Amino acid sequence: MPDHPTDASADGESSASPWLWSLLGLFAACVPCALLVVEKSGSALPPVPLTLAILAALAGYVVAVRVVVAEKFAQCSRRSRILVWLAAAGLFLGSVAVLFAFRPPPPPLPRMSGVRDVAVVGFAGYNGHQDKRVLADVAAEFAHAMAGRLSSATAVRSYAGEASLPLADLQDTHRSGLERKTARFADETNAEIVVGGLVSTDPSGQTTLRPAVFVRADQIPDAPELTGWFLGRPLLIPSGWESAQSRARLTAELTRLVSTLAKFVDALDTWRTGSPAKAARILQGLLDPKQEGGSGSFVPPDLIRLFHGHAAEVQAGGETGPNRQKLLEAARADYRAISRDSPAGRRAELSLQFNAYLRALGPAHDCKPGTVRAGELAQVAQAFRALAKDREFTELQRLKATVNLAQAESCRITAKLLRDDGRVERAVAAVRPAPDITGSVELHALAESIGAVHAAGQGDLAAAIRHIRVAVTYGRDPGQRATWHGLLARWSLDRCDLRTGRAAQQDALIQLAAAEQAGRASTERIRQYEQLFDEELRQAEKRCGTAR
Image 1 (cartoon, rainbow, N blue to C red):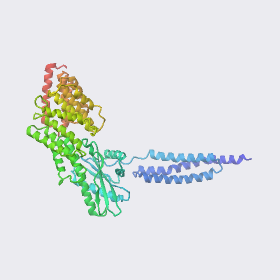
Image 2 (cartoon, helix red, strand yellow; image 1 turned 90 degrees about the vertical axis):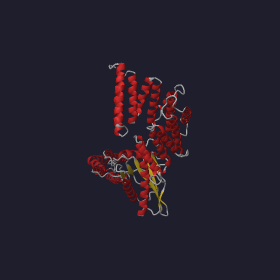
Image 3 (spheres, rainbow, N blue to C red; image 1 turned 180 degrees about the vertical axis):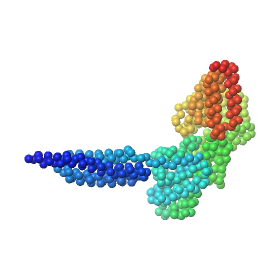
Protein backbone atom coordinates (compact mmCIF):
# COMPACT_ATOMS: atom_id res chain seq x y z
CA MET A 1 0.00 0.00 0.00
CA PRO A 2 1.33 3.53 -0.74
CA ASP A 3 0.58 4.84 2.75
CA HIS A 4 2.79 2.34 4.63
CA PRO A 5 6.20 3.98 3.95
CA THR A 6 4.85 7.33 5.07
CA ASP A 7 3.50 5.83 8.27
CA ALA A 8 6.81 4.10 8.91
CA SER A 9 8.63 7.36 8.37
CA ALA A 10 6.31 9.14 10.73
CA ASP A 11 6.80 6.43 13.36
CA GLY A 12 10.58 6.75 12.98
CA GLU A 13 10.38 10.50 13.27
CA SER A 14 8.18 10.25 16.35
CA SER A 15 10.49 7.82 18.13
CA ALA A 16 13.58 9.86 17.28
CA SER A 17 12.11 13.25 18.24
CA PRO A 18 12.70 13.26 22.04
CA TRP A 19 16.39 12.42 22.00
CA LEU A 20 16.98 14.34 18.76
CA TRP A 21 15.55 17.62 20.05
CA SER A 22 17.28 17.13 23.37
CA LEU A 23 20.59 16.70 21.55
CA LEU A 24 20.01 19.80 19.40
CA GLY A 25 18.96 21.83 22.43
CA LEU A 26 22.05 20.73 24.33
CA PHE A 27 24.27 21.65 21.39
CA ALA A 28 22.52 25.02 20.97
CA ALA A 29 23.10 25.91 24.62
CA CYS A 30 26.59 24.47 24.94
CA VAL A 31 28.70 27.33 23.56
CA PRO A 32 26.64 30.26 24.96
CA CYS A 33 26.60 28.59 28.36
CA ALA A 34 30.35 28.05 28.18
CA LEU A 35 30.81 31.74 27.36
CA LEU A 36 28.56 32.65 30.29
CA VAL A 37 30.67 30.53 32.64
CA VAL A 38 33.84 32.21 31.35
CA GLU A 39 32.41 35.69 31.95
CA LYS A 40 31.00 34.78 35.35
CA SER A 41 34.48 33.68 36.38
CA GLY A 42 35.73 37.20 35.80
CA SER A 43 37.12 37.06 32.26
CA ALA A 44 34.70 39.42 30.51
CA LEU A 45 34.92 39.10 26.75
CA PRO A 46 35.11 42.21 24.58
CA PRO A 47 32.33 42.60 21.98
CA VAL A 48 34.38 41.43 18.98
CA PRO A 49 35.67 38.11 20.44
CA LEU A 50 32.24 37.41 21.91
CA THR A 51 30.56 37.96 18.53
CA LEU A 52 33.11 35.75 16.74
CA ALA A 53 32.61 32.96 19.28
CA ILE A 54 28.84 33.07 18.84
CA LEU A 55 29.18 33.07 15.02
CA ALA A 56 31.54 30.07 15.18
CA ALA A 57 29.07 28.22 17.39
CA LEU A 58 26.27 29.13 14.98
CA ALA A 59 28.25 27.75 12.03
CA GLY A 60 28.80 24.42 13.78
CA TYR A 61 25.18 24.34 14.85
CA VAL A 62 23.97 24.93 11.28
CA VAL A 63 26.13 22.06 10.03
CA ALA A 64 24.74 19.75 12.74
CA VAL A 65 21.15 20.70 11.95
CA ARG A 66 21.72 20.12 8.23
CA VAL A 67 23.05 16.62 8.93
CA VAL A 68 20.11 15.83 11.18
CA VAL A 69 17.60 17.13 8.65
CA ALA A 70 19.25 15.21 5.81
CA GLU A 71 19.35 11.90 7.74
CA LYS A 72 16.17 11.97 9.78
CA PHE A 73 13.78 14.21 7.83
CA ALA A 74 14.76 13.50 4.23
CA GLN A 75 11.46 11.75 3.49
CA CYS A 76 9.33 14.40 5.17
CA SER A 77 7.52 17.19 3.43
CA ARG A 78 9.23 20.54 2.75
CA ARG A 79 6.96 22.16 5.27
CA SER A 80 8.12 19.78 7.98
CA ARG A 81 11.79 20.46 7.20
CA ILE A 82 11.19 24.20 7.38
CA LEU A 83 9.53 23.76 10.76
CA VAL A 84 12.56 21.78 11.96
CA TRP A 85 14.88 24.59 10.89
CA LEU A 86 12.68 27.19 12.59
CA ALA A 87 12.56 25.18 15.79
CA ALA A 88 16.34 24.70 15.74
CA ALA A 89 16.85 28.43 15.15
CA GLY A 90 14.53 29.19 18.05
CA LEU A 91 16.57 26.95 20.33
CA PHE A 92 19.81 28.67 19.40
CA LEU A 93 18.44 32.21 19.63
CA GLY A 94 16.87 31.37 22.98
CA SER A 95 20.20 30.16 24.34
CA VAL A 96 21.95 33.30 23.09
CA ALA A 97 19.21 35.44 24.65
CA VAL A 98 19.83 33.67 27.96
CA LEU A 99 23.54 34.43 27.59
CA PHE A 100 22.95 38.18 27.21
CA ALA A 101 20.19 38.24 29.83
CA PHE A 102 22.47 36.78 32.49
CA ARG A 103 25.72 38.22 31.19
CA PRO A 104 27.53 39.99 34.06
CA PRO A 105 28.01 43.75 33.67
CA PRO A 106 31.52 44.94 32.87
CA PRO A 107 33.62 45.61 35.95
CA PRO A 108 33.40 49.23 37.10
CA LEU A 109 36.27 51.51 36.23
CA PRO A 110 38.51 52.54 39.14
CA ARG A 111 37.19 55.68 40.79
CA MET A 112 39.49 58.56 41.73
CA SER A 113 39.08 60.54 44.93
CA GLY A 114 41.32 63.58 44.49
CA VAL A 115 40.36 67.23 44.62
CA ARG A 116 40.98 67.89 40.92
CA ASP A 117 41.08 64.49 39.23
CA VAL A 118 42.48 64.12 35.71
CA ALA A 119 41.70 61.03 33.63
CA VAL A 120 43.81 60.22 30.56
CA VAL A 121 41.75 58.17 28.09
CA GLY A 122 44.48 57.81 25.49
CA PHE A 123 44.92 58.89 21.90
CA ALA A 124 43.23 57.78 18.69
CA GLY A 125 44.63 57.76 15.17
CA TYR A 126 43.06 59.66 12.28
CA ASN A 127 43.47 56.67 9.97
CA GLY A 128 43.88 53.84 12.46
CA HIS A 129 47.47 53.06 11.34
CA GLN A 130 49.10 54.00 14.64
CA ASP A 131 50.24 51.29 17.02
CA LYS A 132 47.68 51.22 19.84
CA ARG A 133 50.23 49.79 22.26
CA VAL A 134 52.58 52.72 21.68
CA LEU A 135 49.71 55.19 22.13
CA ALA A 136 48.75 53.48 25.40
CA ASP A 137 52.38 53.72 26.58
CA VAL A 138 52.46 57.44 25.77
CA ALA A 139 49.21 57.95 27.70
CA ALA A 140 50.68 56.13 30.72
CA GLU A 141 53.89 58.19 30.55
CA PHE A 142 51.88 61.39 30.37
CA ALA A 143 49.68 60.42 33.33
CA HIS A 144 52.79 59.63 35.41
CA ALA A 145 54.45 62.95 34.52
CA MET A 146 51.23 64.85 35.21
CA ALA A 147 50.83 63.26 38.64
CA GLY A 148 54.25 64.60 39.61
CA ARG A 149 53.37 68.13 38.56
CA LEU A 150 50.00 68.64 40.22
CA SER A 151 49.35 68.81 43.94
CA SER A 152 49.25 65.61 45.96
CA ALA A 153 45.51 66.12 46.51
CA THR A 154 44.89 65.68 42.78
CA ALA A 155 44.74 62.21 41.27
CA VAL A 156 45.92 61.49 37.72
CA ARG A 157 45.26 58.12 36.11
CA SER A 158 45.53 56.59 32.66
CA TYR A 159 42.44 54.68 31.52
CA ALA A 160 43.88 53.85 28.09
CA GLY A 161 42.94 50.25 27.40
CA GLU A 162 40.27 50.21 30.12
CA ALA A 163 37.81 52.77 28.76
CA SER A 164 36.61 52.82 25.18
CA LEU A 165 35.58 56.28 24.00
CA PRO A 166 35.08 57.11 20.29
CA LEU A 167 37.86 59.71 20.26
CA ALA A 168 37.92 59.64 16.45
CA ASP A 169 34.71 61.70 16.67
CA LEU A 170 36.84 64.63 17.82
CA GLN A 171 37.52 65.45 14.18
CA ASP A 172 33.78 65.69 13.45
CA THR A 173 31.65 68.79 13.85
CA HIS A 174 28.92 66.92 15.73
CA ARG A 175 30.21 65.23 18.86
CA SER A 176 27.00 64.67 20.80
CA GLY A 177 27.59 60.92 21.10
CA LEU A 178 31.15 61.40 22.31
CA GLU A 179 30.04 64.12 24.74
CA ARG A 180 27.40 61.85 26.30
CA LYS A 181 29.74 58.88 26.65
CA THR A 182 32.49 61.05 28.11
CA ALA A 183 30.06 62.59 30.61
CA ARG A 184 29.09 59.08 31.78
CA PHE A 185 32.77 58.12 31.98
CA ALA A 186 33.53 61.24 34.05
CA ASP A 187 30.66 60.47 36.43
CA GLU A 188 31.84 56.88 36.85
CA THR A 189 35.49 57.76 37.49
CA ASN A 190 34.89 61.08 39.28
CA ALA A 191 37.19 62.81 36.78
CA GLU A 192 36.89 66.59 36.55
CA ILE A 193 39.14 66.79 33.49
CA VAL A 194 39.47 64.14 30.76
CA VAL A 195 42.46 64.21 28.43
CA GLY A 196 42.69 62.61 24.98
CA GLY A 197 43.77 63.49 21.48
CA LEU A 198 44.10 62.63 17.81
CA VAL A 199 47.29 61.35 16.17
CA SER A 200 48.22 61.40 12.48
CA THR A 201 51.38 60.45 10.58
CA ASP A 202 52.23 61.80 7.15
CA PRO A 203 54.08 59.85 4.42
CA SER A 204 57.44 61.29 5.52
CA GLY A 205 57.01 59.80 8.97
CA GLN A 206 56.29 63.00 10.88
CA THR A 207 53.69 62.53 13.57
CA THR A 208 51.26 65.20 14.75
CA LEU A 209 49.25 65.09 17.97
CA ARG A 210 46.16 67.24 18.40
CA PRO A 211 45.55 67.22 22.18
CA ALA A 212 41.99 67.51 23.45
CA VAL A 213 40.44 67.98 26.86
CA PHE A 214 36.96 67.54 28.32
CA VAL A 215 35.85 69.57 31.34
CA ARG A 216 32.69 68.78 33.26
CA ALA A 217 30.16 71.60 33.21
CA ASP A 218 29.63 71.45 36.99
CA GLN A 219 33.32 72.23 37.53
CA ILE A 220 33.28 75.60 35.79
CA PRO A 221 29.67 76.85 35.61
CA ASP A 222 31.04 80.37 35.19
CA ALA A 223 33.07 79.48 32.07
CA PRO A 224 30.85 77.54 29.64
CA GLU A 225 33.41 78.26 26.89
CA LEU A 226 35.59 75.51 28.37
CA THR A 227 32.98 72.84 29.02
CA GLY A 228 32.76 69.68 26.94
CA TRP A 229 35.45 68.57 24.50
CA PHE A 230 37.69 71.09 22.76
CA LEU A 231 40.89 70.67 20.77
CA GLY A 232 44.23 72.36 21.36
CA ARG A 233 46.78 73.41 18.76
CA PRO A 234 48.63 70.60 16.89
CA LEU A 235 51.92 69.42 18.36
CA LEU A 236 54.55 68.16 15.90
CA ILE A 237 56.70 65.12 16.71
CA PRO A 238 59.42 65.23 14.02
CA SER A 239 61.16 61.98 14.99
CA GLY A 240 57.99 60.00 15.61
CA TRP A 241 57.13 57.87 18.63
CA GLU A 242 60.38 55.89 18.32
CA SER A 243 62.41 58.79 19.72
CA ALA A 244 62.50 58.81 23.52
CA GLN A 245 63.45 62.50 23.48
CA SER A 246 60.48 63.38 21.27
CA ARG A 247 58.12 61.53 23.57
CA ALA A 248 59.63 63.24 26.62
CA ARG A 249 59.22 66.71 25.06
CA LEU A 250 55.66 65.91 24.04
CA THR A 251 54.83 64.66 27.52
CA ALA A 252 56.29 67.82 29.07
CA GLU A 253 54.25 70.06 26.75
CA LEU A 254 51.02 68.16 27.39
CA THR A 255 51.69 68.31 31.10
CA ARG A 256 52.16 72.08 30.92
CA LEU A 257 48.95 72.58 28.96
CA VAL A 258 46.77 70.44 31.22
CA SER A 259 48.42 71.84 34.34
CA THR A 260 47.43 75.34 33.23
CA LEU A 261 43.84 74.21 32.72
CA ALA A 262 43.75 72.47 36.10
CA LYS A 263 45.10 75.60 37.82
CA PHE A 264 42.49 77.73 36.07
CA VAL A 265 39.68 75.43 37.21
CA ASP A 266 41.15 75.49 40.71
CA ALA A 267 41.25 79.30 40.63
CA LEU A 268 37.55 79.48 39.71
CA ASP A 269 36.70 77.05 42.50
CA THR A 270 38.79 79.11 44.93
CA TRP A 271 37.04 82.29 43.81
CA ARG A 272 33.56 80.77 44.18
CA THR A 273 34.32 79.40 47.64
CA GLY A 274 35.21 82.78 49.07
CA SER A 275 38.96 83.26 48.60
CA PRO A 276 39.15 85.89 45.85
CA ALA A 277 42.64 87.10 46.82
CA LYS A 278 44.08 83.59 46.47
CA ALA A 279 42.21 83.07 43.19
CA ALA A 280 43.61 86.37 41.88
CA ARG A 281 47.16 85.23 42.67
CA ILE A 282 46.66 81.97 40.77
CA LEU A 283 45.20 83.80 37.77
CA GLN A 284 47.99 86.39 37.83
CA GLY A 285 50.49 83.55 37.60
CA LEU A 286 48.67 82.11 34.59
CA LEU A 287 48.84 85.49 32.86
CA ASP A 288 52.63 85.49 33.10
CA PRO A 289 53.97 83.69 29.97
CA LYS A 290 57.17 82.78 31.83
CA GLN A 291 55.29 80.89 34.50
CA GLU A 292 52.22 78.79 33.73
CA GLY A 293 50.19 79.88 30.73
CA GLY A 294 52.56 80.30 27.86
CA SER A 295 51.49 79.91 24.25
CA GLY A 296 48.92 77.49 22.95
CA SER A 297 47.20 77.10 26.32
CA PHE A 298 43.83 75.39 26.54
CA VAL A 299 42.66 78.47 28.45
CA PRO A 300 42.56 81.69 26.36
CA PRO A 301 44.43 84.55 28.11
CA ASP A 302 41.38 86.79 27.71
CA LEU A 303 39.31 84.37 29.75
CA ILE A 304 41.95 84.45 32.48
CA ARG A 305 41.86 88.27 32.42
CA LEU A 306 38.08 88.20 32.70
CA PHE A 307 38.11 86.17 35.90
CA HIS A 308 41.10 88.04 37.26
CA GLY A 309 38.88 91.10 37.05
CA HIS A 310 35.99 89.26 38.70
CA ALA A 311 38.24 88.24 41.60
CA ALA A 312 39.35 91.87 42.06
CA GLU A 313 35.71 93.04 42.15
CA VAL A 314 34.84 90.47 44.81
CA GLN A 315 37.78 91.71 46.88
CA ALA A 316 36.53 95.27 46.43
CA GLY A 317 33.25 94.28 48.07
CA GLY A 318 35.06 93.89 51.38
CA GLU A 319 37.01 97.15 51.11
CA THR A 320 36.20 100.86 51.53
CA GLY A 321 37.75 104.08 50.36
CA PRO A 322 40.88 104.11 48.16
CA ASN A 323 41.44 100.35 48.39
CA ARG A 324 38.00 99.66 47.00
CA GLN A 325 38.49 102.15 44.18
CA LYS A 326 41.91 100.70 43.35
CA LEU A 327 40.53 97.15 43.04
CA LEU A 328 37.61 98.30 40.88
CA GLU A 329 39.98 100.17 38.57
CA ALA A 330 42.21 97.07 38.32
CA ALA A 331 39.21 94.98 37.32
CA ARG A 332 38.19 97.61 34.77
CA ALA A 333 41.68 97.49 33.27
CA ASP A 334 41.39 93.71 32.88
CA TYR A 335 38.07 94.00 31.07
CA ARG A 336 39.28 96.79 28.78
CA ALA A 337 42.32 94.69 27.78
CA ILE A 338 39.98 92.06 26.27
CA SER A 339 39.27 92.56 22.58
CA ARG A 340 35.63 92.70 21.53
CA ASP A 341 36.40 90.09 18.85
CA SER A 342 37.72 87.69 21.48
CA PRO A 343 35.56 84.72 22.56
CA ALA A 344 35.37 86.46 25.94
CA GLY A 345 34.72 89.88 24.39
CA ARG A 346 30.96 89.94 24.89
CA ARG A 347 31.29 88.81 28.48
CA ALA A 348 33.88 91.53 29.08
CA GLU A 349 31.44 94.11 27.74
CA LEU A 350 28.83 93.00 30.26
CA SER A 351 31.44 92.96 33.04
CA LEU A 352 32.51 96.50 32.16
CA GLN A 353 28.96 97.72 32.70
CA PHE A 354 28.68 95.94 36.05
CA ASN A 355 32.02 97.46 37.03
CA ALA A 356 30.63 100.88 36.09
CA TYR A 357 27.60 100.14 38.30
CA LEU A 358 29.85 99.37 41.28
CA ARG A 359 31.86 102.57 40.73
CA ALA A 360 28.63 104.59 40.37
CA LEU A 361 27.66 103.65 43.93
CA GLY A 362 30.25 106.08 45.18
CA PRO A 363 32.51 105.83 48.26
CA ALA A 364 29.69 104.57 50.49
CA HIS A 365 28.91 101.81 47.94
CA ASP A 366 25.23 101.75 48.79
CA CYS A 367 22.07 103.25 47.28
CA LYS A 368 21.16 105.89 49.83
CA PRO A 369 19.91 109.22 48.49
CA GLY A 370 22.71 111.63 47.73
CA THR A 371 25.53 109.06 47.70
CA VAL A 372 25.30 107.62 44.19
CA ARG A 373 26.46 109.14 40.91
CA ALA A 374 23.07 109.64 39.29
CA GLY A 375 24.25 110.21 35.71
CA GLU A 376 26.56 107.19 35.64
CA LEU A 377 23.89 104.99 37.22
CA ALA A 378 21.35 106.02 34.58
CA GLN A 379 23.83 105.20 31.78
CA VAL A 380 24.53 101.80 33.32
CA ALA A 381 20.83 100.97 33.53
CA GLN A 382 20.37 101.95 29.89
CA ALA A 383 23.34 99.80 28.85
CA PHE A 384 22.01 96.76 30.78
CA ARG A 385 18.61 97.18 29.12
CA ALA A 386 20.23 97.12 25.67
CA LEU A 387 22.48 94.14 26.50
CA ALA A 388 19.51 92.15 27.81
CA LYS A 389 18.03 92.34 24.29
CA ASP A 390 21.28 91.81 22.37
CA ARG A 391 20.93 88.68 20.21
CA GLU A 392 24.71 88.37 19.88
CA PHE A 393 24.74 87.44 23.55
CA THR A 394 24.08 83.90 24.72
CA GLU A 395 20.84 83.26 26.57
CA LEU A 396 22.71 83.03 29.86
CA GLN A 397 24.45 86.36 29.23
CA ARG A 398 21.12 88.05 28.45
CA LEU A 399 19.74 86.68 31.71
CA LYS A 400 22.75 88.07 33.56
CA ALA A 401 22.18 91.49 31.95
CA THR A 402 18.51 91.35 33.02
CA VAL A 403 19.49 90.58 36.63
CA ASN A 404 22.00 93.44 36.58
CA LEU A 405 19.29 95.70 35.17
CA ALA A 406 17.00 94.84 38.10
CA GLN A 407 19.85 95.62 40.49
CA ALA A 408 20.63 98.99 38.89
CA GLU A 409 16.97 100.05 38.67
CA SER A 410 16.33 99.06 42.28
CA CYS A 411 19.31 101.18 43.32
CA ARG A 412 18.00 104.19 41.39
CA ILE A 413 14.58 103.86 43.01
CA THR A 414 16.09 103.48 46.49
CA ALA A 415 18.25 106.56 45.87
CA LYS A 416 15.06 108.53 45.03
CA LEU A 417 16.23 109.15 41.46
CA LEU A 418 12.98 107.85 39.93
CA ARG A 419 9.64 106.54 41.08
CA ASP A 420 8.79 102.85 41.38
CA ASP A 421 6.76 101.97 38.30
CA GLY A 422 7.18 98.18 38.57
CA ARG A 423 10.32 98.02 36.44
CA VAL A 424 12.23 95.97 39.01
CA GLU A 425 9.43 93.42 39.33
CA ARG A 426 9.21 93.17 35.52
CA ALA A 427 12.94 92.47 35.26
CA VAL A 428 12.75 89.81 37.97
CA ALA A 429 9.72 88.23 36.28
CA ALA A 430 11.66 88.05 32.99
CA VAL A 431 14.23 85.78 34.64
CA ARG A 432 11.72 83.29 36.08
CA PRO A 433 10.94 81.36 32.85
CA ALA A 434 14.66 80.93 32.13
CA PRO A 435 15.55 77.55 30.58
CA ASP A 436 17.37 74.97 32.66
CA ILE A 437 20.93 75.71 31.57
CA THR A 438 24.12 75.83 33.61
CA GLY A 439 24.14 79.01 35.69
CA SER A 440 20.46 79.91 35.24
CA VAL A 441 19.43 78.60 38.67
CA GLU A 442 21.90 80.88 40.45
CA LEU A 443 20.70 83.86 38.40
CA HIS A 444 17.09 83.04 39.24
CA ALA A 445 17.92 83.01 42.96
CA LEU A 446 19.87 86.28 42.71
CA ALA A 447 17.05 87.98 40.81
CA GLU A 448 14.50 86.95 43.45
CA SER A 449 16.75 88.25 46.24
CA ILE A 450 17.03 91.61 44.45
CA GLY A 451 13.24 91.69 44.11
CA ALA A 452 12.90 90.84 47.81
CA VAL A 453 15.18 93.65 49.01
CA HIS A 454 13.48 96.10 46.68
CA ALA A 455 10.01 95.13 47.90
CA ALA A 456 11.10 95.45 51.52
CA GLY A 457 12.50 98.89 50.80
CA GLN A 458 9.11 99.89 49.42
CA GLY A 459 7.40 98.60 52.57
CA ASP A 460 5.79 95.52 51.00
CA LEU A 461 6.98 92.82 53.43
CA ALA A 462 4.57 90.20 52.09
CA ALA A 463 6.10 90.49 48.61
CA ALA A 464 9.60 90.60 50.10
CA ILE A 465 9.01 87.35 51.98
CA ARG A 466 7.53 85.73 48.88
CA HIS A 467 10.59 86.68 46.82
CA ILE A 468 13.15 85.64 49.42
CA ARG A 469 11.55 82.23 49.89
CA VAL A 470 12.05 81.56 46.18
CA ALA A 471 15.66 82.76 46.41
CA VAL A 472 16.29 80.36 49.29
CA THR A 473 14.72 77.52 47.31
CA TYR A 474 17.04 77.98 44.34
CA GLY A 475 20.15 79.30 46.08
CA ARG A 476 23.10 76.95 46.57
CA ASP A 477 25.80 79.09 48.13
CA PRO A 478 25.67 78.71 51.95
CA GLY A 479 26.93 82.25 52.54
CA GLN A 480 24.19 83.76 50.37
CA ARG A 481 21.56 81.48 51.83
CA ALA A 482 22.57 82.50 55.35
CA THR A 483 21.99 86.15 54.40
CA TRP A 484 18.65 85.34 52.78
CA HIS A 485 17.45 83.28 55.74
CA GLY A 486 18.46 86.20 57.97
CA LEU A 487 16.35 88.59 55.86
CA LEU A 488 13.42 86.17 55.99
CA ALA A 489 13.75 86.05 59.78
CA ARG A 490 13.88 89.86 60.10
CA TRP A 491 10.87 90.49 57.88
CA SER A 492 8.87 87.70 59.53
CA LEU A 493 9.59 89.16 62.96
CA ASP A 494 8.57 92.61 61.69
CA ARG A 495 5.20 91.04 60.84
CA CYS A 496 5.08 89.33 64.27
CA ASP A 497 5.40 85.86 62.72
CA LEU A 498 7.67 84.65 65.51
CA ARG A 499 7.52 80.98 64.57
CA THR A 500 8.79 81.61 61.03
CA GLY A 501 11.33 84.11 62.35
CA ARG A 502 12.84 81.65 64.84
CA ALA A 503 13.01 78.86 62.24
CA ALA A 504 14.64 81.17 59.67
CA GLN A 505 17.25 82.27 62.21
CA GLN A 506 18.18 78.65 62.91
CA ASP A 507 18.38 77.95 59.17
CA ALA A 508 20.70 80.93 58.75
CA LEU A 509 23.01 79.64 61.49
CA ILE A 510 23.07 76.18 59.89
CA GLN A 511 24.09 77.73 56.55
CA LEU A 512 26.75 79.82 58.30
CA ALA A 513 28.18 76.69 59.92
CA ALA A 514 28.45 75.08 56.48
CA ALA A 515 30.13 78.23 55.15
CA GLU A 516 32.59 78.15 58.05
CA GLN A 517 33.54 74.54 57.24
CA ALA A 518 34.22 75.62 53.65
CA GLY A 519 36.40 78.49 54.87
CA ARG A 520 33.90 81.15 53.81
CA ALA A 521 32.74 82.40 57.20
CA SER A 522 34.55 83.07 60.46
CA THR A 523 33.59 82.18 63.99
CA GLU A 524 33.40 85.90 64.71
CA ARG A 525 30.83 86.38 61.94
CA ILE A 526 28.69 83.56 63.33
CA ARG A 527 28.86 85.13 66.81
CA GLN A 528 27.77 88.49 65.37
CA TYR A 529 24.81 86.83 63.65
CA GLU A 530 23.81 85.08 66.87
CA GLN A 531 23.88 88.35 68.81
CA LEU A 532 21.93 90.15 66.09
CA PHE A 533 19.32 87.38 65.95
CA ASP A 534 18.91 87.38 69.75
CA GLU A 535 18.35 91.13 69.76
CA GLU A 536 15.86 91.04 66.85
CA LEU A 537 13.93 88.18 68.46
CA ARG A 538 13.88 89.93 71.84
CA GLN A 539 12.53 93.13 70.29
CA ALA A 540 9.88 91.20 68.35
CA GLU A 541 8.73 89.28 71.45
CA LYS A 542 8.50 92.54 73.36
CA ARG A 543 6.48 94.19 70.60
CA CYS A 544 4.30 91.23 69.56
CA GLY A 545 4.15 89.00 72.62
CA THR A 546 5.91 85.67 73.06
CA ALA A 547 2.86 83.55 72.23
CA ARG A 548 2.88 84.28 68.50
